[in-house]
Image 1 (cartoon, one colour):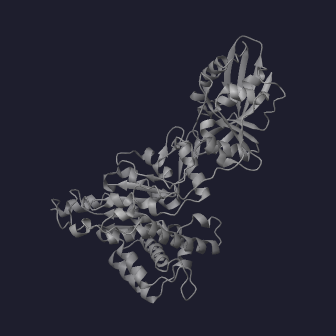
Image 2 (cartoon, rainbow, N blue to C red):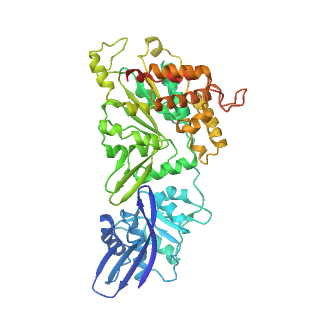
Length: 526
């Protein structure tokens, strides 16, 4: 007897539909799975047979052949277990023929006891099933919240605890309550952050640099001696970033789901990610890779912050691998199984000491490094990578009067208001320019045409830029980065409003250009 069901498999962060064709006939017992199954799919035979037997649905001795179509695409993962089991139960006449499975997708891993276990990448699979026009999506109960984000008016999601419950539902004996409404996603939960900028003492210039970086989504490098607050400030950047949009939350959740990083309660990711990998990580861990490509740290930081503490200590090959993703906001990994593209639009935040001992230029500590050693240490960061970091800010030690002060600094909430106002005016510029994805655009993503349109300079500004270009030996890329930062500073200073000339965000003045140039601290060393 032949039966058909539908399930889904992952490749990268996207999923594709898999048709399960199960054919059974009276013959010597045999269970064969074809259609390019991976190791975990081949092993599903034992999970399926033992699960069915232990749940009171023993499969009669027969020859079973399962084909996974399309047969030319590699399939891996345990999420196909449930779809194969349902097809087998239908072929074995345990499920009645009148049970309509033509518009259903089954996703889940089986245990010997009959429990349906949660799997990775459910959101991507549910989206694939929805786009294929399937009306009913059956997922493990632990993945219901995640899968519910794929709902439409014509789609229903069912959370399955165990196989007996599913069989009873398909037989019409006891229906499982389906989810028909999109989850209420609160993307603006900021009140329970343990970190806050009010805890930062002093460092006025660094706080200003961080605010500008957050307003324009600019890459940032903080340079200072040990204890100056580089890491402390960096870890508080997520508290001043704008709330995620619904589309950003879904895209981020897909990445984290594939990587198995969804919270235990199964909620959608609603906070901007903050990834802080150790400097000993490999290129594959940073960029992504593997026989079946998986997202790396730069993709897991998508729509959030990637923090690299002690930047010069990172493997040179790993840090240089950041160059293309920083420009393209995506990374493509090619393997024998195919080519996968992961999104990687993140805000790069780095911290480093000014020299190996950490006290070069310090007012307190004594530097033991020779001038050549200082230059060699700074040279661990290549010029091309440094060009891609918009803001480079030096941070001195905090004075005693500042650190001992009982007066609270400005809070994250106050800074975030200004950041959101600046982001809103930049989005309005991109909307009027005709960008379809203006809601996710930022000043840091402006292309060459945008710079000409939105960063027009007067004669005073051009003279400052010309002098800086020659004196600091700037590259064309660094020149463009300064323009982007100046545009963000103008947006912040004008409070997200038009100036008298009607320019959105106000015109760029020499004050804005000078501040942007001053935020290129390391260019003087190259």
